[in-house]
Length: 357
Image (cartoon, rainbow, N blue to C red; front, side, top):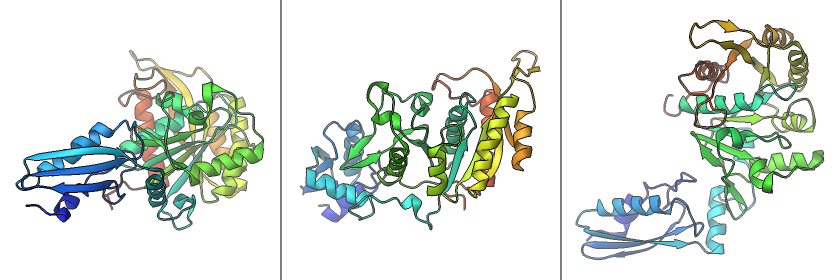
């Protein structure tokens, strides 16, 4: 007959799909009943309508049936009590009863990259989303904060506007899509209502995105900043003094002029600008390959020269894939340009995929 320790050992390899932690480590295994050739296990889930309950149940049953001599495995799924959920949330916080952010620990091995622009309409959020997906495709653990509190658009770009994060005793689990962990004000605003807040409330929400969201292990955190040089951009500079910046512009002279101001704000707060992205750089004919510069030429070089950096990428205009409203197909001209940008960013941030060291 198998022992309780054997049962726990095989179940230790099963992770909760949302938090990527062992169900044994998180005390989700509540009762074990072992017979001569059968085993029954109770597993407590955080919420009654857990969308991944079938996946967890199947994984537990398969592990139990792998034990020697076990021919039947019964799995009963329960829902945690309020006390159990509070203890679960405390474990997520690393044993701390109050919300803290390990990402903001000075010793945390996390790189922050703020994506900034001088004005709206240059595709900053599109660049952020596609860069995040490309970095994740390289094997990096990527998080994205939609810090554009008034003009949040990343959920729409990723195609997850109708999803909502799971909340466990005031701990928020970010939405995961394309290997990227995402949080946005959109998820907390009903019916697309406008956000009518002053500066201090914006700062509080930004800090909540760090302290109340369970990010888990992250290599790089991208922050999609509001355009311009307002309160939120300044808050990011103060909250993350070691953050790097990537400036997005278009070839147009007017866009370039205001992009320089956004970059100079970063430099004056000791943020290193690691490059400039010229978005909507040109249109490339799919038949002949000729490039047409619809919005002029040279804006990216102008911004890079003023900020003493270089043009990290020139991303052309083109069609998007069906995966999301503005996620580029990986084999498109735009997708290949973003993939090269991701390689450049990873090199400049000295990022290495997990297991490559």
